Image (tube, rainbow, N blue to C red):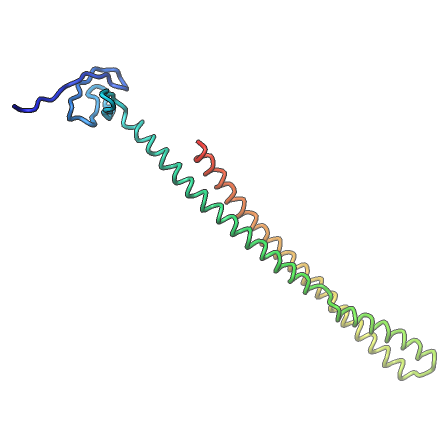
Length: 190
């Protein structure tokens, strides 16, 4: 009247010892070597599988899923960094363009040259006071233009140094993301 348990004798997957497995056992450790075993029942057959192997398969599936999710996130992150890089490059080009000598500086150079030529002409025409004032104005404009040119050159050097530093940061960040993408692709493809 009581249910009797059937017992099968199977071999340990690790050491080959004979093990008695009853119908109510799903998992146990080998009494000889200690290897944990899972009892697999499929289609009327019963077999043993080491627990580590089963866990490894589950872990591989979990790792692959995590890698696929990470890969999606990293691709989006890389696109965002590249977009920010493009925006920064455009802002840099605008900043660099503003630091160059503008049309006003070119006009000042032309005006200084014109006044210089006029002052020589006035000296030749014997208007000494006018020639002196024209010469002073030409020298003043020349000095102003020299300051603009010098300031523009220093500004350009500063802007270029900032660009190099910022470019290196962007480059390092993008390379780090690309490296992570390659690593995750290896896990997905395995």
